Image (cartoon, rainbow, N blue to C red; front, side):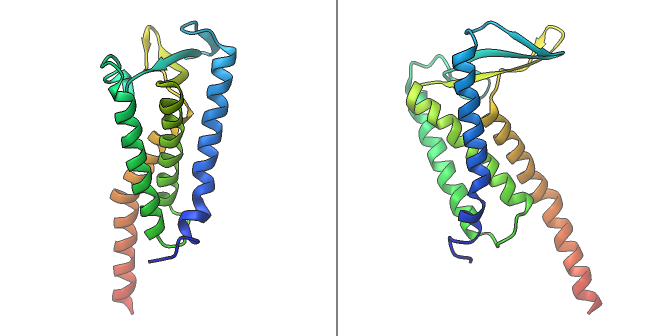
Length: 172
């Protein structure tokens, strides 16, 4: 096991960048956009200020407020697990390390909204024709990209590396 000054601390800048970009873009959205009024950016993309009182896709949004603290607590637990996971990793900037930090930055970005405002600020509105994807934010992009990297790492990169290590060991 490596010490805390290695992987965890040396790579938290990735999570910090996601967190800062998320909070700055949410501040911009709240100060520049009108709730529910789309502003066209490019074909298939609007800036549309929306507030999410639930989880992904507004899951549990209308449950009376308890979900604010449930999702905040869940994000705190997940963030703690991610930091411990980083602590245990070797000192390499791998897809796994990137993934953990992207999820961590996104989770903290959304929990800041929940704790301070009781909701998450969303503003990125992607659509095709009349179909609109759920409005999202930079934190959500970090979480999705990070989860994708973790899946890629676990199911493709790690097994591939293990296979190539075994082949190299057999040649010796």
